[in-house]
Length: 306
Image 1 (cartoon, rainbow, N blue to C red):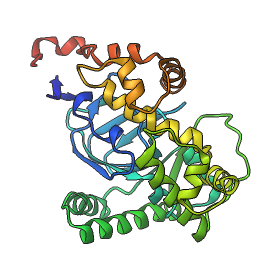
Image 2 (cartoon, one colour):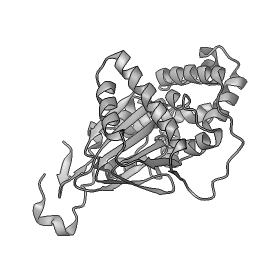
Image 3 (tube, rainbow, N blue to C red):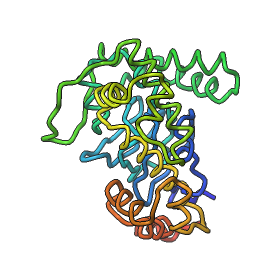
Image 4 (cartoon, one colour):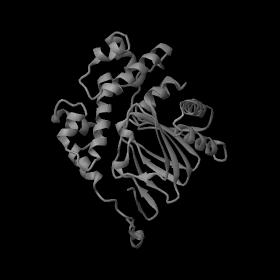
């Protein structure tokens, strides 16, 4: 079960599902949980804070969200909720990557977000509270028409950010390359590429097989994907494998070698190298950190309940 200490919830990794389903929509509408370590996933993430505060450690910067704040970030880079208020309540909506490219954002903003920036806006007293409650219900309804309607409205809300005061939080000194927003044909190809990789990343796939799934040339597939996402096809395949491996490592009986094989890595050494690159630690150290008991604030020690 998720643990509570001094009124704050602590994230329970074994109950998390988003890491294992890269092409799925996942909604979490609850008190945010403080995380023992960073995690990552293959969806873009939208957070809306109804009340209280939520403090994130992102990729090279911090994001401090308050009631009425709305933020968008790419979940493929490590991020971690490091603190919350006791009364915090939010909704986290994890959208498959293909929806990100439906957004009519500038190519530069798109590239900054894919490289780890966090887009934040706030409009206290507006309609966001009611809207996000409704979208959360629709997205969890299991009804395709309601789900699609909520996604369409949600994307329009994100696009509206450019007409409002907003912040783009990012790491200093990250150079940008020339970026291109995908046209309709490119968007269609990216969608087919993402769907094929999501279905087959645990198998031995290469750029030729990926391109064939979209009926395009391998060089074109590599080019359009790189220009649109900032990632190579191999990097995206590795990301999905690492996200899936992360989910397996969260289970009590996880065996690192079996996790490596089940996630699509050809060897333990290749898995360890890739995992260390994204997590900054070995898979074994990651497992150990997940099992570390959260530390209670000193002043709250007499109130401990587990």
